[in-house]
Amino acid sequence: MDYQEIIAGTLGKENTFGTCVGLIKPEHMSFARFSTDNTSGKMRGYVGEGRFTDDPLHTFGGAGVVEILNLQKLLHFICGRGYEHHVAASLSTVASAVYEASTLLSGMGHARPQS
Image 1 (cartoon, rainbow, N blue to C red):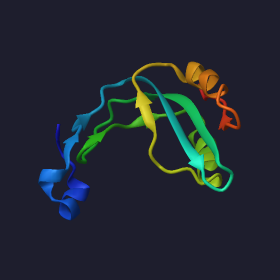
Image 2: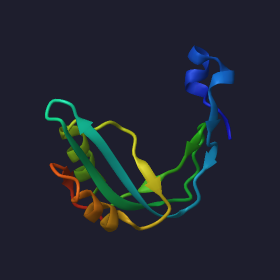
Image 3: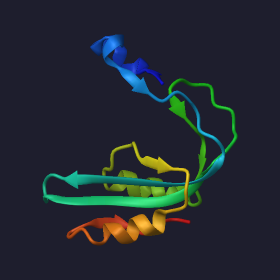
C-alpha cells in the first residue's frame, strides 16, 4: 500500500493513502464494468475473461498486462457505448456467474461474457 501519485499533487499526499502498488501475478482473470445510464435511469455493464501475463511493465501504481481474446471487438463495444475506462478485475474465472447475477437487475443492458 502506498499513496496515490496522480491525485497527491491536488489533494496532498497525506490524503491519498490506500493505493495498491505492484504488478499483478500472471493468472486467469475476470473483469466487469457496471455503471448507471443517467439519461435512462438504468444500470448497464459488461463482463468478460482474460489472462494477466508476465510481460514486463514499467509504470507506477497497481498494474498488469492482460490478454483478452477478440480485444478489438470488446474495445469497439466499450467505446461505442461510452463506457468509462476502468473495470473491476478478479483473479478467478467468474464472468458467467457475474453475468447471470446481473440479469436479475431489471433493465440491465449488458454484453455476454467473453471467453
